[in-house]
Image 1: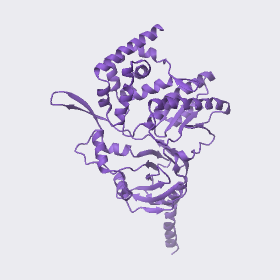
Image 2: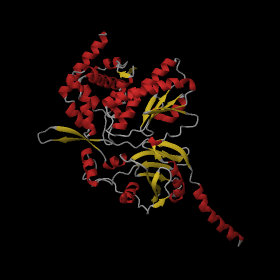
Image 3: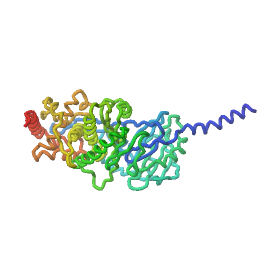
Image 4: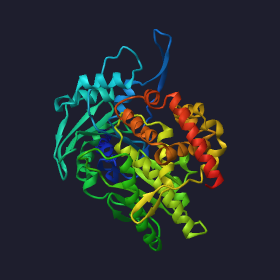
Length: 476
Protein backbone atom coordinates (compact mmCIF):
# COMPACT_ATOMS: atom_id res chain seq x y z
CA UNK A 1 0.00 0.00 0.00
CA UNK A 2 2.78 2.40 0.78
CA UNK A 3 4.31 1.86 -2.65
CA UNK A 4 0.96 2.44 -4.39
CA UNK A 5 0.31 5.62 -2.39
CA UNK A 6 3.74 6.95 -3.24
CA UNK A 7 3.21 6.31 -6.96
CA UNK A 8 -0.15 8.11 -6.83
CA UNK A 9 1.44 11.06 -5.04
CA UNK A 10 4.21 11.29 -7.67
CA UNK A 11 1.67 11.28 -10.50
CA UNK A 12 -0.29 14.09 -8.85
CA UNK A 13 2.85 16.17 -8.37
CA UNK A 14 3.82 15.76 -12.01
CA UNK A 15 1.16 18.24 -13.18
CA UNK A 16 2.26 21.30 -11.17
CA UNK A 17 5.89 20.55 -12.00
CA UNK A 18 5.05 20.91 -15.71
CA UNK A 19 3.26 24.19 -15.06
CA UNK A 20 6.24 25.41 -13.04
CA UNK A 21 8.47 24.99 -16.13
CA UNK A 22 6.73 27.92 -17.84
CA UNK A 23 9.07 30.93 -17.52
CA UNK A 24 8.00 34.27 -16.12
CA UNK A 25 7.53 37.23 -18.46
CA UNK A 26 10.00 39.85 -17.24
CA UNK A 27 11.99 41.05 -20.28
CA UNK A 28 10.71 44.34 -21.70
CA UNK A 29 10.66 44.41 -25.50
CA UNK A 30 9.71 47.22 -27.88
CA UNK A 31 8.30 46.06 -31.19
CA UNK A 32 6.45 49.00 -32.75
CA UNK A 33 3.70 49.71 -32.33
CA UNK A 34 3.82 47.78 -29.02
CA UNK A 35 5.70 47.37 -25.77
CA UNK A 36 5.36 43.90 -24.34
CA UNK A 37 7.00 41.46 -21.95
CA UNK A 38 8.66 38.19 -22.88
CA UNK A 39 10.61 35.64 -20.85
CA UNK A 40 14.18 36.53 -19.93
CA UNK A 41 16.77 35.68 -22.55
CA UNK A 42 14.54 36.06 -25.58
CA UNK A 43 16.48 36.86 -28.74
CA UNK A 44 14.85 38.45 -31.77
CA UNK A 45 14.95 36.68 -35.12
CA UNK A 46 14.75 38.16 -38.60
CA UNK A 47 11.29 38.06 -40.12
CA UNK A 48 10.97 35.63 -43.04
CA UNK A 49 11.60 37.36 -46.38
CA UNK A 50 8.95 37.65 -49.08
CA UNK A 51 10.19 35.91 -52.20
CA UNK A 52 9.89 37.48 -55.65
CA UNK A 53 9.11 35.33 -58.68
CA UNK A 54 9.74 36.86 -62.11
CA UNK A 55 7.75 35.89 -65.17
CA UNK A 56 7.88 37.12 -68.75
CA UNK A 57 4.52 38.10 -70.24
CA UNK A 58 4.26 38.07 -74.05
CA UNK A 59 1.70 40.33 -75.74
CA UNK A 60 -0.11 39.59 -79.04
CA UNK A 61 2.13 42.03 -80.89
CA UNK A 62 5.25 40.21 -79.74
CA UNK A 63 6.22 42.64 -76.98
CA UNK A 64 7.47 41.09 -73.75
CA UNK A 65 7.23 42.43 -70.22
CA UNK A 66 8.81 41.16 -67.04
CA UNK A 67 6.25 40.74 -64.26
CA UNK A 68 7.05 40.36 -60.55
CA UNK A 69 4.83 37.90 -58.70
CA UNK A 70 4.59 36.69 -55.13
CA UNK A 71 3.33 33.81 -53.07
CA UNK A 72 -0.02 35.13 -51.71
CA UNK A 73 0.44 33.12 -48.49
CA UNK A 74 3.77 34.87 -47.85
CA UNK A 75 2.24 38.30 -48.51
CA UNK A 76 -0.66 37.55 -46.17
CA UNK A 77 1.69 36.55 -43.37
CA UNK A 78 4.24 39.32 -43.96
CA UNK A 79 1.66 42.10 -43.60
CA UNK A 80 0.50 40.77 -40.22
CA UNK A 81 3.74 39.53 -38.60
CA UNK A 82 5.41 42.08 -36.30
CA UNK A 83 8.15 40.10 -34.56
CA UNK A 84 9.71 36.72 -33.82
CA UNK A 85 11.71 35.61 -30.78
CA UNK A 86 13.10 32.45 -29.17
CA UNK A 87 14.23 31.99 -25.57
CA UNK A 88 17.01 29.83 -24.12
CA UNK A 89 14.67 26.86 -23.58
CA UNK A 90 13.58 26.81 -27.22
CA UNK A 91 10.12 28.35 -26.70
CA UNK A 92 9.18 30.45 -29.73
CA UNK A 93 7.12 33.66 -29.74
CA UNK A 94 5.39 35.37 -32.66
CA UNK A 95 3.71 38.78 -32.38
CA UNK A 96 0.92 39.35 -34.90
CA UNK A 97 -1.50 42.06 -35.95
CA UNK A 98 -4.47 40.11 -37.42
CA UNK A 99 -5.88 42.11 -40.32
CA UNK A 100 -7.79 39.88 -42.71
CA UNK A 101 -8.79 36.35 -43.60
CA UNK A 102 -6.87 34.71 -46.41
CA UNK A 103 -7.58 36.16 -49.85
CA UNK A 104 -8.42 33.95 -52.80
CA UNK A 105 -8.75 31.27 -53.85
CA UNK A 106 -6.12 32.06 -56.46
CA UNK A 107 -5.91 30.29 -59.79
CA UNK A 108 -2.09 30.42 -59.74
CA UNK A 109 0.51 29.77 -57.06
CA UNK A 110 2.08 33.19 -57.70
CA UNK A 111 0.17 36.43 -58.14
CA UNK A 112 0.94 40.09 -58.77
CA UNK A 113 0.43 42.60 -55.99
CA UNK A 114 -2.56 44.01 -57.84
CA UNK A 115 -4.21 40.56 -57.90
CA UNK A 116 -3.43 40.01 -54.23
CA UNK A 117 -4.70 43.46 -53.20
CA UNK A 118 -7.94 42.92 -55.15
CA UNK A 119 -8.53 39.59 -53.40
CA UNK A 120 -7.72 41.13 -50.02
CA UNK A 121 -10.15 43.98 -50.64
CA UNK A 122 -12.87 41.50 -51.57
CA UNK A 123 -12.31 39.57 -48.32
CA UNK A 124 -12.36 42.76 -46.23
CA UNK A 125 -10.89 43.52 -42.84
CA UNK A 126 -11.07 41.02 -40.01
CA UNK A 127 -14.25 41.14 -37.89
CA UNK A 128 -14.06 40.34 -34.15
CA UNK A 129 -16.26 37.27 -34.61
CA UNK A 130 -13.77 35.90 -37.17
CA UNK A 131 -10.71 35.94 -34.90
CA UNK A 132 -11.05 32.24 -34.01
CA UNK A 133 -11.28 31.22 -37.67
CA UNK A 134 -8.31 33.47 -38.47
CA UNK A 135 -6.28 31.77 -35.75
CA UNK A 136 -7.07 28.36 -37.19
CA UNK A 137 -5.92 29.52 -40.62
CA UNK A 138 -2.74 31.06 -39.23
CA UNK A 139 -1.65 28.04 -37.19
CA UNK A 140 -3.07 25.38 -39.49
CA UNK A 141 -4.78 23.74 -36.48
CA UNK A 142 -8.34 23.81 -35.11
CA UNK A 143 -8.77 26.49 -32.48
CA UNK A 144 -10.45 25.76 -29.17
CA UNK A 145 -12.97 28.25 -27.82
CA UNK A 146 -11.03 31.30 -26.54
CA UNK A 147 -11.22 31.89 -22.76
CA UNK A 148 -11.57 35.41 -21.39
CA UNK A 149 -8.73 36.77 -19.23
CA UNK A 150 -8.86 39.65 -16.77
CA UNK A 151 -7.68 42.82 -18.61
CA UNK A 152 -5.11 44.93 -16.75
CA UNK A 153 -3.27 48.20 -17.38
CA UNK A 154 -3.48 49.30 -21.01
CA UNK A 155 -5.25 46.09 -22.07
CA UNK A 156 -9.00 46.46 -22.52
CA UNK A 157 -9.80 42.91 -23.66
CA UNK A 158 -7.86 39.64 -23.64
CA UNK A 159 -8.54 36.00 -24.44
CA UNK A 160 -6.48 32.81 -24.31
CA UNK A 161 -6.77 30.02 -26.86
CA UNK A 162 -5.07 26.76 -27.73
CA UNK A 163 -4.61 25.90 -31.41
CA UNK A 164 -2.84 22.60 -31.98
CA UNK A 165 0.49 22.82 -30.15
CA UNK A 166 0.32 26.62 -29.73
CA UNK A 167 -0.82 28.85 -26.91
CA UNK A 168 -2.23 32.13 -28.22
CA UNK A 169 -2.98 35.37 -26.38
CA UNK A 170 -5.51 37.50 -28.27
CA UNK A 171 -5.78 41.06 -26.98
CA UNK A 172 -6.89 44.64 -27.61
CA UNK A 173 -5.29 47.76 -26.10
CA UNK A 174 -7.00 50.96 -25.04
CA UNK A 175 -7.07 53.86 -27.48
CA UNK A 176 -6.62 54.25 -31.22
CA UNK A 177 -4.48 51.57 -32.84
CA UNK A 178 -5.31 49.18 -30.04
CA UNK A 179 -5.72 45.93 -31.92
CA UNK A 180 -6.42 43.19 -32.38
CA UNK A 181 -3.02 41.67 -31.58
CA UNK A 182 -1.99 38.08 -31.01
CA UNK A 183 1.02 36.67 -29.20
CA UNK A 184 1.53 33.09 -30.36
CA UNK A 185 3.70 30.80 -28.22
CA UNK A 186 5.01 27.47 -29.50
CA UNK A 187 6.26 25.74 -26.33
CA UNK A 188 9.36 23.59 -26.48
CA UNK A 189 7.71 21.02 -24.19
CA UNK A 190 4.48 20.83 -26.23
CA UNK A 191 2.16 21.83 -23.36
CA UNK A 192 0.36 25.00 -24.55
CA UNK A 193 -2.38 24.94 -21.88
CA UNK A 194 0.26 25.49 -19.19
CA UNK A 195 0.93 29.01 -20.50
CA UNK A 196 -2.47 30.47 -19.68
CA UNK A 197 -1.57 31.87 -16.26
CA UNK A 198 1.81 33.28 -17.31
CA UNK A 199 0.32 34.99 -20.37
CA UNK A 200 -2.47 36.47 -18.27
CA UNK A 201 0.08 37.92 -15.85
CA UNK A 202 2.20 39.27 -18.72
CA UNK A 203 -0.67 41.50 -19.87
CA UNK A 204 0.29 44.13 -17.28
CA UNK A 205 3.40 44.92 -19.31
CA UNK A 206 1.64 45.44 -22.64
CA UNK A 207 1.02 48.93 -24.05
CA UNK A 208 1.31 51.01 -27.19
CA UNK A 209 4.99 51.83 -27.70
CA UNK A 210 4.53 55.58 -28.06
CA UNK A 211 3.00 56.02 -24.60
CA UNK A 212 6.02 55.31 -22.43
CA UNK A 213 9.68 54.55 -23.06
CA UNK A 214 10.74 50.93 -22.90
CA UNK A 215 13.06 50.21 -20.00
CA UNK A 216 16.65 50.28 -21.31
CA UNK A 217 18.99 47.39 -20.74
CA UNK A 218 20.66 47.41 -17.33
CA UNK A 219 23.72 49.66 -17.31
CA UNK A 220 22.42 51.75 -20.24
CA UNK A 221 21.12 55.31 -20.13
CA UNK A 222 18.40 56.98 -22.18
CA UNK A 223 18.61 60.34 -23.97
CA UNK A 224 15.52 61.69 -25.66
CA UNK A 225 14.77 64.46 -28.12
CA UNK A 226 11.54 63.66 -30.04
CA UNK A 227 11.21 62.19 -32.57
CA UNK A 228 14.28 60.20 -31.44
CA UNK A 229 15.32 58.30 -28.35
CA UNK A 230 18.90 57.11 -27.82
CA UNK A 231 19.90 54.11 -25.69
CA UNK A 232 23.64 53.93 -25.05
CA UNK A 233 26.31 52.39 -22.85
CA UNK A 234 28.85 55.12 -23.71
CA UNK A 235 30.47 56.86 -20.72
CA UNK A 236 29.17 60.19 -19.48
CA UNK A 237 31.97 62.12 -21.22
CA UNK A 238 30.37 61.18 -24.57
CA UNK A 239 26.82 62.26 -23.68
CA UNK A 240 27.36 65.81 -24.87
CA UNK A 241 28.29 64.50 -28.32
CA UNK A 242 25.22 62.25 -28.30
CA UNK A 243 22.98 65.20 -27.48
CA UNK A 244 24.46 67.01 -30.49
CA UNK A 245 23.73 63.91 -32.56
CA UNK A 246 20.11 64.00 -31.39
CA UNK A 247 19.83 67.65 -32.42
CA UNK A 248 21.32 66.86 -35.84
CA UNK A 249 18.99 63.87 -36.27
CA UNK A 250 16.01 66.21 -35.81
CA UNK A 251 17.35 68.31 -38.67
CA UNK A 252 18.03 65.32 -40.89
CA UNK A 253 14.59 63.90 -40.09
CA UNK A 254 13.10 67.11 -41.50
CA UNK A 255 15.21 66.58 -44.63
CA UNK A 256 13.87 63.02 -44.95
CA UNK A 257 10.31 64.29 -44.54
CA UNK A 258 10.87 67.03 -47.11
CA UNK A 259 11.35 64.35 -49.78
CA UNK A 260 9.13 61.65 -48.27
CA UNK A 261 6.36 63.34 -46.25
CA UNK A 262 4.72 61.55 -43.35
CA UNK A 263 1.15 60.43 -44.05
CA UNK A 264 -1.40 63.07 -43.07
CA UNK A 265 -2.60 62.95 -39.45
CA UNK A 266 -0.18 60.11 -38.64
CA UNK A 267 0.87 59.52 -35.04
CA UNK A 268 4.55 58.64 -35.21
CA UNK A 269 6.21 56.75 -32.34
CA UNK A 270 9.68 57.73 -31.19
CA UNK A 271 12.40 56.19 -33.37
CA UNK A 272 15.07 54.33 -31.42
CA UNK A 273 18.82 54.69 -31.87
CA UNK A 274 20.99 52.23 -29.91
CA UNK A 275 24.67 53.24 -29.66
CA UNK A 276 27.23 50.64 -28.55
CA UNK A 277 30.63 51.62 -27.21
CA UNK A 278 32.19 48.13 -27.46
CA UNK A 279 32.60 46.28 -30.73
CA UNK A 280 32.09 42.82 -29.21
CA UNK A 281 28.74 43.88 -27.68
CA UNK A 282 27.65 45.44 -30.98
CA UNK A 283 28.54 42.31 -32.95
CA UNK A 284 26.69 40.06 -30.51
CA UNK A 285 23.60 42.28 -30.80
CA UNK A 286 23.42 42.61 -34.60
CA UNK A 287 24.42 39.00 -35.28
CA UNK A 288 27.10 37.29 -37.30
CA UNK A 289 25.71 38.39 -40.67
CA UNK A 290 26.20 42.11 -39.85
CA UNK A 291 29.22 41.81 -37.54
CA UNK A 292 31.41 43.52 -40.17
CA UNK A 293 29.30 46.68 -40.20
CA UNK A 294 29.47 49.91 -38.24
CA UNK A 295 25.72 50.42 -38.19
CA UNK A 296 22.47 48.83 -39.32
CA UNK A 297 18.75 49.42 -39.28
CA UNK A 298 17.18 46.29 -37.83
CA UNK A 299 13.70 45.74 -39.27
CA UNK A 300 13.04 43.13 -36.57
CA UNK A 301 13.93 45.36 -33.61
CA UNK A 302 12.89 48.56 -35.48
CA UNK A 303 16.12 50.09 -34.19
CA UNK A 304 18.92 52.09 -35.74
CA UNK A 305 21.96 50.34 -34.22
CA UNK A 306 25.33 52.14 -34.31
CA UNK A 307 28.84 51.22 -33.20
CA UNK A 308 30.73 54.12 -31.60
CA UNK A 309 34.02 52.22 -31.44
CA UNK A 310 36.05 53.42 -28.46
CA UNK A 311 39.21 52.21 -30.17
CA UNK A 312 39.11 55.03 -32.73
CA UNK A 313 42.22 57.19 -32.39
CA UNK A 314 40.40 60.51 -32.70
CA UNK A 315 37.21 61.72 -31.04
CA UNK A 316 36.52 63.82 -34.13
CA UNK A 317 36.76 60.76 -36.36
CA UNK A 318 34.43 58.87 -34.01
CA UNK A 319 31.83 61.65 -34.00
CA UNK A 320 31.84 62.04 -37.78
CA UNK A 321 31.62 58.27 -38.29
CA UNK A 322 28.64 58.04 -35.93
CA UNK A 323 26.88 60.96 -37.67
CA UNK A 324 27.43 59.52 -41.14
CA UNK A 325 26.19 56.06 -40.15
CA UNK A 326 23.21 57.49 -38.24
CA UNK A 327 22.19 59.71 -41.18
CA UNK A 328 22.47 56.72 -43.57
CA UNK A 329 20.73 54.09 -41.45
CA UNK A 330 18.27 56.68 -40.19
CA UNK A 331 16.94 57.02 -43.73
CA UNK A 332 16.34 53.26 -43.95
CA UNK A 333 14.48 53.49 -40.62
CA UNK A 334 12.40 56.45 -41.79
CA UNK A 335 11.53 54.96 -45.19
CA UNK A 336 10.43 51.76 -43.45
CA UNK A 337 8.14 53.88 -41.28
CA UNK A 338 6.41 55.84 -44.07
CA UNK A 339 6.21 53.28 -46.89
CA UNK A 340 3.03 51.19 -47.16
CA UNK A 341 3.52 47.60 -46.00
CA UNK A 342 2.86 46.01 -49.38
CA UNK A 343 5.07 48.38 -51.41
CA UNK A 344 8.40 47.04 -52.67
CA UNK A 345 11.19 49.63 -52.68
CA UNK A 346 14.17 48.49 -54.79
CA UNK A 347 17.62 48.39 -53.23
CA UNK A 348 19.13 51.03 -55.53
CA UNK A 349 16.48 53.57 -54.54
CA UNK A 350 16.76 52.85 -50.80
CA UNK A 351 20.57 52.78 -50.71
CA UNK A 352 20.88 55.67 -53.15
CA UNK A 353 18.94 57.95 -50.82
CA UNK A 354 20.68 56.60 -47.71
CA UNK A 355 24.09 57.41 -49.21
CA UNK A 356 22.73 60.78 -50.34
CA UNK A 357 21.73 61.69 -46.79
CA UNK A 358 24.91 60.31 -45.19
CA UNK A 359 26.80 63.21 -46.82
CA UNK A 360 24.56 65.91 -45.33
CA UNK A 361 26.13 68.77 -43.42
CA UNK A 362 24.07 70.50 -40.72
CA UNK A 363 24.41 74.26 -40.55
CA UNK A 364 22.17 76.76 -38.85
CA UNK A 365 19.46 74.21 -38.23
CA UNK A 366 19.39 73.18 -41.91
CA UNK A 367 20.76 70.14 -43.69
CA UNK A 368 22.45 70.36 -47.06
CA UNK A 369 24.02 67.63 -49.22
CA UNK A 370 27.70 67.51 -50.09
CA UNK A 371 29.63 65.52 -52.67
CA UNK A 372 30.32 62.03 -51.37
CA UNK A 373 33.76 60.38 -51.19
CA UNK A 374 32.04 57.65 -53.23
CA UNK A 375 32.41 59.90 -56.29
CA UNK A 376 35.77 58.38 -57.26
CA UNK A 377 34.30 54.86 -57.18
CA UNK A 378 31.38 56.06 -59.29
CA UNK A 379 33.78 57.71 -61.76
CA UNK A 380 35.56 54.38 -62.31
CA UNK A 381 32.26 52.50 -62.82
CA UNK A 382 31.73 53.75 -66.38
CA UNK A 383 29.71 50.74 -67.49
CA UNK A 384 27.30 51.04 -64.59
CA UNK A 385 26.83 54.76 -65.32
CA UNK A 386 25.70 54.07 -68.89
CA UNK A 387 22.02 53.89 -69.81
CA UNK A 388 22.23 50.11 -70.04
CA UNK A 389 24.14 49.90 -66.75
CA UNK A 390 21.60 52.12 -64.96
CA UNK A 391 18.74 49.93 -66.20
CA UNK A 392 20.53 46.85 -64.84
CA UNK A 393 21.24 48.59 -61.51
CA UNK A 394 17.57 49.52 -61.10
CA UNK A 395 16.50 45.95 -61.80
CA UNK A 396 19.16 44.31 -59.60
CA UNK A 397 18.02 42.01 -56.82
CA UNK A 398 19.39 42.41 -53.29
CA UNK A 399 21.73 39.48 -53.88
CA UNK A 400 23.20 41.12 -57.00
CA UNK A 401 23.35 44.63 -55.50
CA UNK A 402 25.15 43.49 -52.34
CA UNK A 403 27.35 41.03 -54.23
CA UNK A 404 30.93 41.38 -55.46
CA UNK A 405 30.34 44.78 -57.08
CA UNK A 406 28.50 46.39 -54.18
CA UNK A 407 30.97 49.29 -53.77
CA UNK A 408 30.22 50.39 -57.33
CA UNK A 409 26.49 49.76 -56.85
CA UNK A 410 26.44 51.98 -53.74
CA UNK A 411 28.50 54.69 -55.46
CA UNK A 412 26.45 54.86 -58.66
CA UNK A 413 23.19 54.75 -56.69
CA UNK A 414 24.45 57.74 -54.68
CA UNK A 415 25.53 59.53 -57.87
CA UNK A 416 22.15 58.94 -59.52
CA UNK A 417 20.12 60.22 -56.55
CA UNK A 418 22.47 63.14 -55.83
CA UNK A 419 22.33 64.29 -59.46
CA UNK A 420 18.56 63.89 -59.79
CA UNK A 421 17.92 65.69 -56.49
CA UNK A 422 20.43 68.55 -56.89
CA UNK A 423 21.84 68.91 -60.41
CA UNK A 424 19.32 67.58 -62.93
CA UNK A 425 17.20 69.84 -65.16
CA UNK A 426 13.81 70.73 -63.69
CA UNK A 427 12.03 68.21 -65.90
CA UNK A 428 13.98 65.32 -64.43
CA UNK A 429 14.07 66.26 -60.74
CA UNK A 430 10.58 64.93 -60.12
CA UNK A 431 11.41 61.44 -61.42
CA UNK A 432 12.32 59.90 -58.02
CA UNK A 433 9.05 61.20 -56.52
CA UNK A 434 6.97 59.87 -59.42
CA UNK A 435 8.72 56.51 -59.19
CA UNK A 436 8.17 56.20 -55.41
CA UNK A 437 4.51 57.26 -55.74
CA UNK A 438 3.90 54.41 -58.20
CA UNK A 439 5.51 51.93 -55.81
CA UNK A 440 3.28 53.12 -52.97
CA UNK A 441 0.24 52.68 -55.22
CA UNK A 442 1.12 49.00 -55.69
CA UNK A 443 3.19 49.09 -58.89
CA UNK A 444 6.06 46.64 -59.11
CA UNK A 445 9.57 48.08 -59.47
CA UNK A 446 9.65 46.84 -63.07
CA UNK A 447 6.36 48.60 -63.85
CA UNK A 448 7.48 51.83 -62.19
CA UNK A 449 10.83 51.71 -63.97
CA UNK A 450 9.17 51.20 -67.35
CA UNK A 451 6.92 54.24 -66.82
CA UNK A 452 9.38 56.64 -65.20
CA UNK A 453 12.80 55.52 -66.48
CA UNK A 454 12.37 54.30 -70.08
CA UNK A 455 15.47 53.88 -72.23
CA UNK A 456 15.35 57.42 -73.65
CA UNK A 457 15.22 58.97 -70.16
CA UNK A 458 18.08 56.78 -68.93
CA UNK A 459 20.19 57.92 -71.87
CA UNK A 460 19.56 61.55 -70.93
CA UNK A 461 20.42 60.79 -67.30
CA UNK A 462 23.61 58.97 -68.28
CA UNK A 463 24.76 62.03 -70.24
CA UNK A 464 24.05 64.26 -67.25
CA UNK A 465 25.99 61.97 -64.89
CA UNK A 466 28.96 61.97 -67.26
CA UNK A 467 29.00 65.75 -67.36
CA UNK A 468 28.73 65.99 -63.57
CA UNK A 469 31.55 63.48 -62.96
CA UNK A 470 33.83 65.21 -65.46
CA UNK A 471 33.19 68.61 -63.90
CA UNK A 472 33.84 67.31 -60.39
CA UNK A 473 37.05 65.60 -61.56
CA UNK A 474 38.29 68.93 -62.97
CA UNK A 475 37.34 70.68 -59.74
CA UNK A 476 34.96 73.09 -61.51
